[in-house]
Image (cartoon, rainbow, N blue to C red; front, side, top):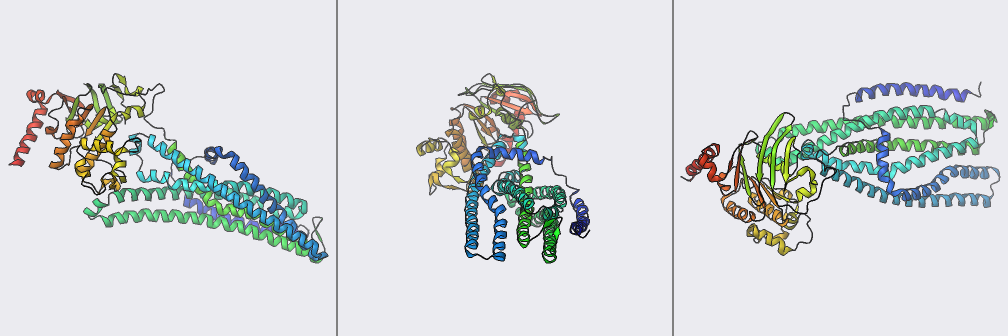
Length: 628
């Protein structure tokens, strides 16, 4: 019975561990039971999709694994060499044999370190390439989403998906993936070596393994919960920051700094609690793994010392000091990979949680897609036709109701009406930013759904009320990475739209720095730059959506002159509230509640003395009153 006592004691000790573990289990379940994050993905699905990014580098990974085998040989063989050194010292203490063993051990150590260096170097290089490709795919997919889908996703969330989340995933390829394989092979190699050295002591060590597996599987479940919580709250903080930093001027104007700070504090505290829960989970898991390691060593020393002092055997196996030394190192090499995985478990779960978030974005199917038989159009004449078009942003809430009109090539057509009448919606539908529910939209007699989206939009130039300029310089904002255009051609476009009047006054001309959103230029200057941007891309159809709103009188004169010139380029569609700016349009379409109320030339509509006449008279009287 005494012989089996060392096997019974570990069971009692682990029983105590199990009680502690169950207590921790219920605490963790309470902490994570309210997790309500979005759709879940299985580990196998995440791994399968991530491995697709590693597939192009199969040869490099094969080389890494070959190098890794050298390190594994060292991990498995080094305890045997140390045991042999200890046996030599104890038995004969022959210096020549001792020096040979030490030299062998030192040589294997140096080779292992060199292999580890090259392994790390290759992994980092491959990991960065995979990271770059993942970022590119995520950004490209986001670009393909429709306006409606992008409107429903906070900008801060998208920024997190493209920037922060791939960083967490890169650790999987640069460290965790190879470490998992290496540690698995090390554990197998160590077990085989231990069994060959002394199967009785190996059985004692294996008593702890089932509990280790149970601990790992259960804590894996809870760690995924806490990582999802951390990711969700971090995204919430980024979204809040993105929105509020962009709107900081409004916050200051209305003296709302205190309230905004309180809102930020709430989100920051939520992130703090989520991170504390994550720390709590791994604060329980790591000590349990370490306790199993320490306990197994204690029983090794107990059995080894008892056998050495009393000259007894354990389960029929003789135990010598060399075996005790070798097993001490093997137990360390058996538990160290598991302990390392425990240390890396945090990053592993973070990688999986981040990958899940990215793939959920990438699984969003773009609402606007090319038809299988969609065609490319090298050029268009600019003929546009709406045939009984019905459209709603939300089901049942019709914005356009049976709208029909015909625009001939090179015509200038203006859309007027009250806010919400559907003017801007019509312009968005022509560019296919949204798809209609009923009817048909034709360009040169071709249904726009039969034209590739990129080809269709290439022929449109849009000038909006809120001009967006990118950080950089004036030249890059006009060209938008268009290649093969000289500075003289850029300035010619600027002169055509009168943008040269202020560019020539700048110290650096086209090289003048443009700050974020172009806030170092006036609204009129930004608008003139958008005109130049449109002209340089030579569109067949130009769209102006309130492009002359909020412009000072002097700049408006320049813009009106630019518009007159631009009418000669192609078809022009204009949305304007100032009726004085559209009097010379070939056709004016008056919309009301999503339907065409009146249409015709300026003089024709005045002659009708209908709704357009009322709007014009009202604006004219108001203008006369302001001038007086």
